[in-house]
Picture 1: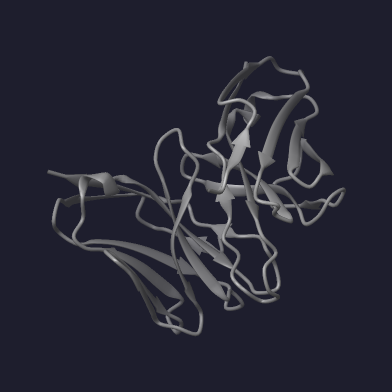
Picture 2 (picture 1 turned 60 degrees about the vertical axis):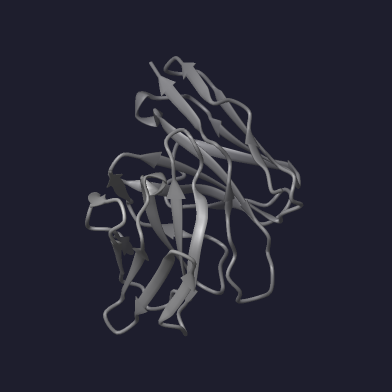
Length: 116
Length: 112
């Protein structure tokens, strides 16, 4: 059974704090993703990674960074949290599969972050 | 620029009837379209997908239709059940990239 876990379900942080969100997958997937979900905006891609130590910007990378030191773990870092980063954060992973093929992403349960 | 659009934020359907969720896209380079279902406080789960070379894919109560000329796809759920109440996201993928582009979601409520 596929599993993506996220380190916290709920977090409350203060403006200016450095925040770490951790994601671990046990499916040996090459690809990992970080999204945020906001009402009326759907899921927006922040960063993704195709391999260890590799990262690419998504659609809204500003104010975030990521780290992928091991294949199974992908961390999202808020360098200096701001109130507009209050959101639901979702991690996902997928297998690279065959070139040109569909890739199904598997999601973790999400971390609801509140920045005060 | 919203490449994948779900124009109906919510939909209410009676149990046993058909639910139709719609999705429009603008990028003709998309090769695959996926539907995800999301319950509150859970991550999205994959439901069904369709390749751009097909116009229909069916899996039990769920059928996805693709109209490439109109850049439109729809998810049909029949018969609808109370457990189908959730937010449904349409997503699209090109064959050359792993990332998905999501729509804004439609909240489906199936009433008794």
